[in-house]
Length: 283
Image (cartoon, rainbow, N blue to C red; front, side, top):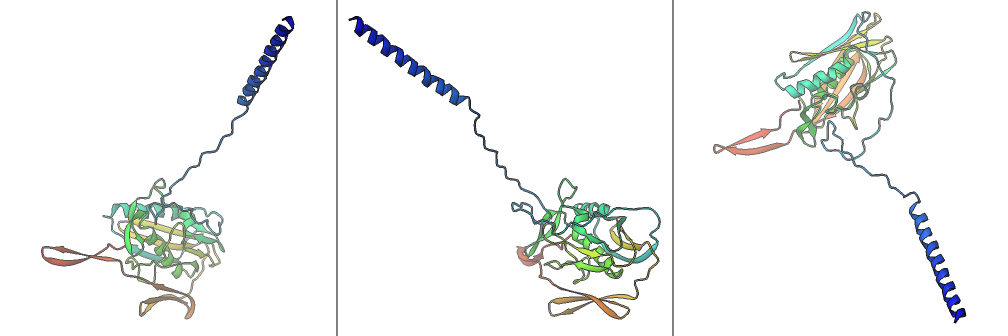
């Protein structure tokens, strides 16, 4: 009987030890550092051309040295001037134009340097002060951030042409515009299309860009006393294509081509009369 009692006690003790080891193992397991997964976020950006962009914007192919401003004296030789007009009653568009002008006025482009409109003006966002006005989207004009910016780039394009500067990147709008002659515009789009020229004048130059009382003016001034020659800019139309040609002292040195679509139209019926309404010109 004593032997049986001793054997039972030994069995109970062994079971208690096993239970203690199992519990200890569970405690050790819960003290290990938990595995965490970083949260995934999706962001939506707003651009000039697409109000709800979820794709990754294209990277700038080349970053040029930052251009600086200089409002001191010393740039007294005017090479060219070009003026376009805008409606001051269109308040949001006017705000966008003046916002871009602030970034461009008194900008110095050293001899041999490249001017990139997108790099200087930057991304058109709400935080940068841009508002909604008409922009091109597909075959119509719709509200988008930064509407009016293309008039600024087109005005600079025309001034750069007359200063005999080397135009390196330029594209026309897909739809007809009205602030410069057809064939004479330079569209910009933050994530795909830039306007660029190289200063091949032989002198540092400075842009004087102003927007006052409905007049958008770009003048190009040189630091040195240089001559651009007898510059003539001509636009011809053949069929639905436009050809812009620049000649200097009778020799052609720049040509660019453009083709446009008509803005989409809608037809409405009012007072038993049918009226064709055309979407407003790009502002």
